[in-house]
Amino acid sequence: MTRYAQGRAPARVQAISLQSQARNRFIETFSLLLAAAFVLMAALLIAPKARAQSPTDVLTYLTTDRFPDTERALNEIGTSGLATAPQIVEALAANRLLFDAAARKLYFADESGALFDAATGAPAAGISPDDLKRVRLNNAVRRSLNAARGALTLMSPDPARRRAAAEAVFKSRDASALPLVESALEKESTPAIRKKLEEARAAIIAADASAPEARRLESLETLKERGDQDALGTLATIAAASEGRVKTSAEAGVAAIQSRLAMWRNVQNVWYGLSLGSVLLLAAIGLAITFGVMGVINMAHGEMVMLGAYTTFVVQEWARTNHPELMNYSLFIAIPLAFLVTGAVGIFIERVVIRFLYGRPLETLLATFGISLILQQAVRTIFGANNREVSAPAFMSGSFDFGALSIGYGRMWIIVFAMAVFAALLFVLRATSFGLRMRAVTQNRRMASSMGIDTNRIDALAFGLGSGIAGMAGVALSQIDNVSPNLGQSYIIDSFMVVVFGGVGNLWGTLLGALTLGVANKFLEPVAGAVLGKILLLVFIILFIQKRPRGLFALKGRAVEA
Image 1 (tube, helix red, strand yellow):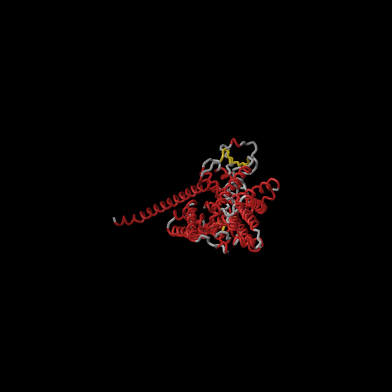
Image 2 (tube, helix red, strand yellow; image 1 turned 60 degrees about the vertical axis):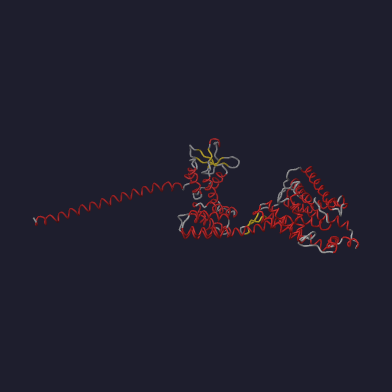
């Protein structure tokens, strides 16, 4: 028995070995078949994506009338190599992209309505737009559209378009635009545009949850350095959707940008306050002369400003009709003309009305108020009650960035103009015989008269000078306010506040008072509102005058101090 078992043992071992080899061959064969099946399935899954990169498939997606397909086409059109891609994207943005659903053909129309084949760009003959459907848009498609427009113009030869494209990509944060941004960065040589492209790349990478953490953290630092409102919004979105170090870095960036923007808001308030102060200076400086020299409360001073603005309108209408090439120089023509017109009107008012009312302030106030009503009605009769359009010349249009502050050229030039008028007036008062006589009459009218100065003539010329400066203020105000018969009424009260606060008849006090009230008003507006802010300023001036009745800078002179 033992000998039999020992004889069969080798045969059994051999059988088991054969079974094991057969099982291994089966497993190997099954594994190969399974791997082949996986390869086939992967090929089937990848094939549509490969085909989607071709121009034909991109256009086909735009003919399905399905928003996801339209969005997919826009994400791929930038890398499709399609020559007509810019025209297709612009046509979609203008609602001029059409398709034939049955034939799966795409067309775009130009501004005149002519149809073109989207695949070739050739004119589409024999096809009516009425037989086609428009490619529809929704919010998701519009985001992809903005990204596609930005990506397609990243390679534009126009620097302004490349810069705008980089900004569009930054705001969209579309991951499909990253290869184009990288390619544009390699070719870009302009430092400012290159920086915009780097910021766009940083926005895409930082928002991509699948990107390596180190790259996302580096991109967050780039966004933090940008530091504007768009960067703040991007960082806040990333902080809400992220975890760990990325979330912490994004939140730190949000806090830093908020602090920086708060500082720039204060700078902005100062700038706007200086801008408002320059306007108040222009409106009040003429009043400071008439009030200081003659003690006349001229309620018609605002109408001098209004006449200057209408003079600008008349000059521009003349240039537009007869010499369009002079439109950009119309303000240079209007400034001296407004000075002469309003100065002549001021002298006429002084000679006809005010000269008989010296020493009677209440009657002077009522008379000049009546004159203001007459002038307003005269302008309504001649020009109508509606606002009149006064265009800004090219050099006063647009703006430029200073840090996080946007400075408009119009406001900047008005500040320059106000300072130039102030400097010119100081020169007239300090360096001319007329200025010497006017200062003498201001300080001691009787003594000036006894020295042979014709005080009546000085009064008329001073009133004309103050009115003429108000007319030049109207030229400046026509660029930032509505030109209407009520234009001057918006500034007359503020002008009196400036003159009284700064010191009656003192130009330096008028300058400081205008700038101080302008800046204070802009800081009070966000806190208390426009109306309550003005009320608070009025209360402050009333209390200030109780303490210093002559204002910040009182005039010196025997008659003045008597």
